[in-house]
Length: 186
Image 1 (cartoon, rainbow, N blue to C red):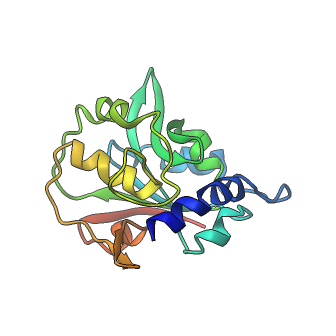
Image 2 (cartoon, rainbow, N blue to C red):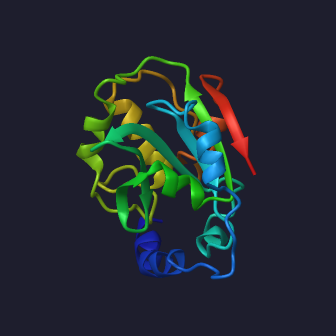
């Protein structure tokens, strides 16, 4: 299975970078101003962006995840894994490039004070197009979980089993009672 995944990785990488040019994002700066005071370090996002060709490969309702890490150089930032790799994105840009967002507050202990410094340990690593946990690459939901693990969260994570492998998905957060829904925009 791993060889097949590695063989199709270049195609998935190319396909995932395509999007329909006429799509209009539903979240705006107004949403940022409405919800910015609710967003704290560790706020986790499950999102959808319509018109992305990668949605054909990952057709789930909420195919992307990210986590708010606090201010980096004075700018509110999220950590996310996208085609370019594990990156920091400013919160306004992150929100205003989405069509649907559900934000969750973690209801468990983790190191909030050093959360942003943990991000530097995985920022810049490559995107994991073959969704394996045994490499130094990350896909979006895996990067979010890794952030909490590095920040000392000791909890059981919900995983989805497919093809004899475990994957983190939006269900990791949406179906976990230790994550409390803060808001949803769609």
